[in-house]
Length: 104
Image: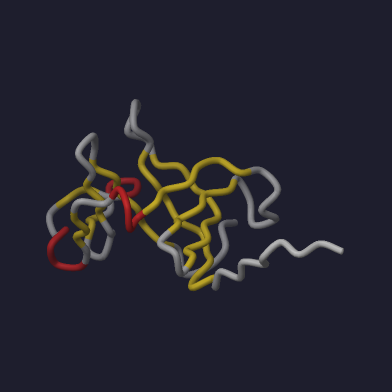
């Protein structure tokens, strides 16, 4: 009989998210899960079969900007960054943009 503890972590939000790549600064579309423990997990598709990246927001995030704090910055395909979250770590700055609907 297995007596190992079962860990239940709540999923807060899921959806499509554009993220800017670190080297070429291109925008890449990923399916993302935001978990209650502060993990933001990136997948290639909404099937969640191909894991790409995990970010620990609670442990590695220095600051987060959104809304009018991002005004004037260029976002996905030249659109203005009006409500794009920015995450800053000691190493780099991450930009994300969410989608309301699934990509075509």
